[in-house]
Image (cartoon, rainbow, N blue to C red):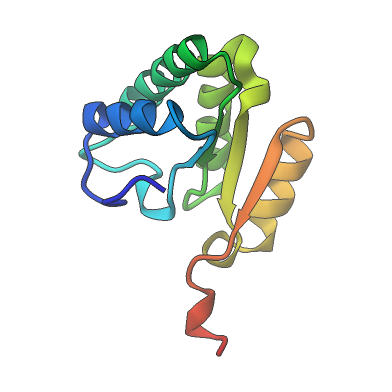
Length: 133
């Protein structure tokens, strides 16, 4: 998780991802980072993909990005996923879809699995602490 997980604009987030990937292999787009006014996914994701490609080229190692596609409706979630697949293109196998199952509900998880059966599905449980001990 890139910290702070809330407040980073697209360029600083992509730069932090690049620096992490030089020594690591997995970054997730945490739950509050899905598509913020200050960091819209259509601006952020291409920068993150470029950072990942540069890190892979420099290290010779595969990297993985888990993108939060959770949204307030299924159509928006699928639009985010489709944009991510388009952005990553031939590197779509290095892209996971994070779905916040507690916030989005079981239907979001089911939709993601059925619509994108070939993608890694990263179930996130943010918010569950409100109802568990």
